[in-house]
Amino acid sequence: MKKFQTDLFVADNRLVGPCATLLTLQYPGDLPDMIAGQFAELQAPSAKVLLRRPISIHAIDREKNLVEFLIQIVGQGTQSLASLKQGNKVNVMLPLGNGFGYRTTHVARPLLVGGGVGVAPLLFLGQEFAEHGIRPSFLFGGRTEALILRKDEFVKYGDLFMTTEDGSAGEKGFVTNHSLLMDSESFDRIYACGPTPMLKAVALWAKEHEIACEVSLEHRMACGIGACLCCVEDTADQGNVCVCKEGPVFTIDKLKWFN
Image 1 (tube, one colour):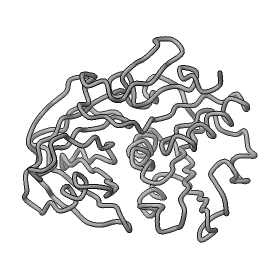
Image 2: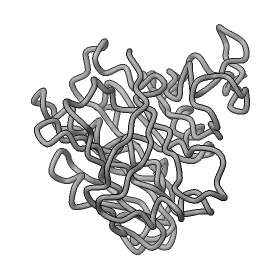
Image 3: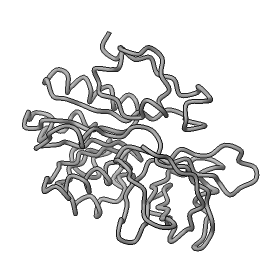
């Protein structure tokens, strides 16, 4: 898939959670083809931030040529992106990496599992399923309800279930403890993004129930093109690979998580 490096202009930038901003960028011309699960490398406006920041593609609007990024504010780079104002310019490389494999697999009953800001690529994925007449189930987890982001948007495309560690929304506990869904075998594929411990727990559950599963890994990806070698993952079939280039999405049979 062809990659682009270009300047995009800020159409909107607003807080959508305690430490998260929704950055909407205007693409110059028609949006390039993008797959849910792919990401972009955004150049932070601060001169103190040297490296670009890898951010999942959160959603797109093909009619208006807009692309959205849900950004967790954790340091200088993301704080700098959160400070952008309407009309500001951002240099962006996209689309990068390999996304979820929904275009090449037949899926009728998808389950989309997210933790924290890991919900970001799942809105785009939900949009794609909805366009093909499929209503997915979303299962999201967070420490508190306030940290489960953009709930009103996700329910436009599927059924939303939640778990929180403090019990403030949904069922108390982790996503793998959710009784309504995790005791069910009615799904034919699982797509997950979030912290590694959550991904491993979801992957193990999927393996035990013989359900196909894809996970999007959250590694540090400085360059986004496989040059800096800081995002290496040891895989079952290819050995060490760069997550930014061969991933960030992998089927769980490719990962050495069960050895």
